[in-house]
Figure 1 (cartoon, helix red, strand yellow):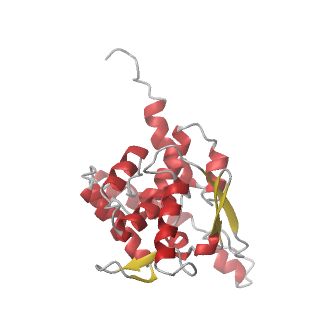
Figure 2: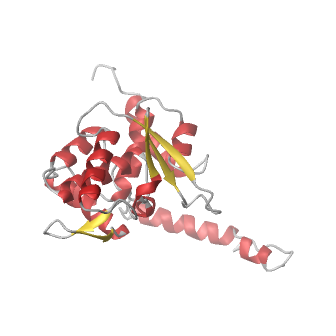
Length: 243
């Protein structure tokens, strides 16, 4: 409200104290009534990622595509809008791995674009280079080596137009259910993005590097929530006290 007031040219800024107090009282009343705070999709761990990939039928085009979607989603810490916008020309294999161009994102207001480096992996199921190579072989076989990277596929294995953003949620949730992941019904595309940040922090990657890689603002409260989720177990006051 204050921003709109200022942009309209008014010099006297409205006070928001009353609104803040009312909102605080509302949140307290909800908490006392048993309501929980904002619920986020659970992050995908590396073990969960491999279980979900194992649920893919890698003898089919759909399975090969879904494996790429899972690995890129976590490794890029990608938003679903970024994933479905990728084209075949946006990924380049280099000696160290893959260079992925994100042409625009939520925090890239001017669409300057950014290239994200993804190192080669060590596990055959989740090595980003191998996963990408398997999918590009499918595209080559189908004679579709340009345009959108992720495509719809019908039940006969025919490639169609671009994959929709809503379909990403469906694929992630379906694979989590098929892999019998606890809480599978709550998994969404954001689980991959959250998972990338969570596993990176658990591996000792600095917060600033995670924020840059995932295209978050440097002081994003979202990243800090992922970090706290790791720290509550890693730096726990009750760890090793002999209980």
